[in-house]
Image 1: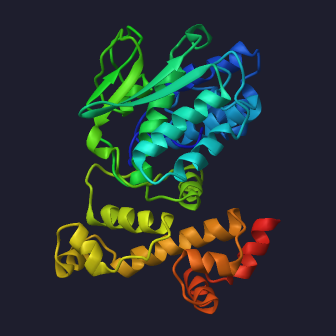
Image 2: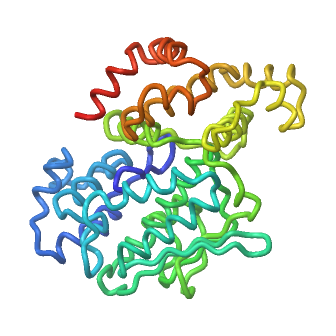
Length: 344
């Protein structure tokens, strides 16, 4: 969970004060802070007031969670062992729609911890996503609820390929809205002193297909930690996102993959217009399809340990040999080699 934060693509935020909020958990557990800064590769930052950038803060999050063995950063009464939130992400990415993913996340959190509660409610025209801490005194600076709202908002946006516009943001704390709160990165203003920490988005996103895979998730995390670059969606629902969503849904339901003409019809476009729009966005229908099949093939072989024949069938290949040839073109290796590595 600690890996999925940034202010924006430009990474210009200063997370110095927010880092102090985070480290309250280590202080509560009477843990020395130096090893955390060291593990995050930020030893010099601990001794000065230089700005802490988003990707540095992400490393500090990860180091705190790893050294405390707690995905809740020591800010609750009980630990959530390291890996808890990675499993939550796996559960969410196995869903077909955003609404189903939200419900599964809420169910997962309810099962694994009594210290934090996530709720999602589908109302007439909006979705409310709320986070409640059962012992707010364990988090005196109010970091954890802010973090979870930001984390879930960004993750759910990423999972459907478009930044979810937040209609309203609420906080239980009385603090005047400011850039020293993580909520600022969801939207600059919010309601204070409310009954719960929550955000609302349009109900029209409830049935939006999930179009990302676990392999893409880990690649995105690696880019943030290694290069300081995170692939967040922007606020425009472009043709690429919509095509990916429709193809991903077909893959997950093991339907025959639609051709460009069928996708264009679903988007109320002509084939020529869809082809032109994809070109303007720097890709093509075939490239999107190949990328999705590649990522799904990696998931099936390396993580789910399916046989090559079963993976080929799920991805719509009539022959195993055709799948093996395509997989080597996509990745440069044979599927049998990846499957062996995934078992080790």
